[in-house]
Amino acid sequence: MDTLGIIVLIVIIILLFLFIRCFRIVPQAHVFVIERLGSFHAQWETGLHILVPFIDRIAGKVSLKEKVVDFKPQPVITKDNVTMQIDTVVFYQVTDAKQYIYGVERPLAAIENLSATTLRNIIGEMELDATLTSRDVINTKITSILDQATDRWGIKVNRVELKNILPPREIQDAMEKQMKAERERREKILQAEGDKKSQILVAEGEKESQILRAQAKKEAQILEAEAQKQAMVLRADAVREQKILEATGEARAIEMVQEALAESIVKLNNANPNERVIQLKSLESFAKAADGKATKIIIPSEIQGLAGLATGLKAIVENDKAPAAPAATSAPAANSNYSSNTGYQDYSIN
Image 1 (cartoon, rainbow, N blue to C red):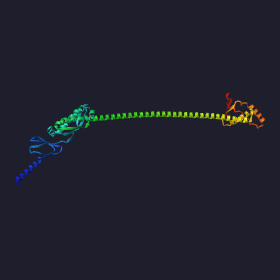
Image 2 (cartoon, one colour):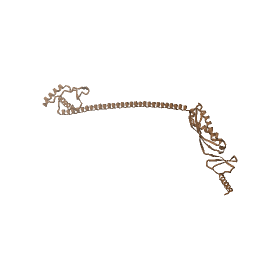
Image 3 (cartoon, rainbow, N blue to C red):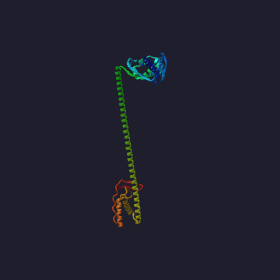
């Protein structure tokens, strides 16, 4: 092959390469910024595009995905003159590829410096304790300021987080001592509250115990009183029943005396006796009445002269020639209550 053929082949290969290079494919979530003859021409989005050789140029390939940038710690001074090291994490996303390419030189460096200055301004207005406890407030302020400042660069700051807050070592030691003292104080408070509750519970237990003992004593006294009441009722019932029995015995004795007298009268009437025989029969009737079944008997007051009665009995025996009547026993010496109205005397026989 001669030299001309080699040159033609090279030219064909170059043209073929240029032709292939004219076709460009933009991937998903990316934008190509195209310049034509040195000035902005268009933004290519996802798809197939044709680039004019030697006229068009890709000025930049921009990703529309959200990016995370972790900036190194920045020294900041609080309102109470405490120097701390704070590093931030920025979440941002490109919304305008043209502004991102032509708006600012080195966008990441610009965001880093802007976040550092904004952080110093915010922390400079706060004291150490507020800085340590107000991360959400600081994050919100930095996000708002950065988003507003980077809007003209085609960048949207979605979120800014304080990753670490590192105070000086002596401040950390003081904070640890303060935390330890606070925990000891809380421990003492909790222990005191526990002792207080324990004493309250003990006092309440003693109170309930005394109340229960008093109630038990009260119930015991009530039961004892009821027992005494029942005993008194039973004794009263026994006395009443005894009196009823005594009254019944007296009534029965009277009936027996009356029956004996009636029987004696009938027999005497049949025998037509004299007065002494009547008295003797009366004594026999009283002997039957006083057979031990009755507790009390009533004896007529006329039958008191035992000596005269014995003489009369002897005369009657001699006259009637009958067997000797049994000697009358001496009248029981008991407490007697004489009644002038009835003519009877009450003897109690035990």
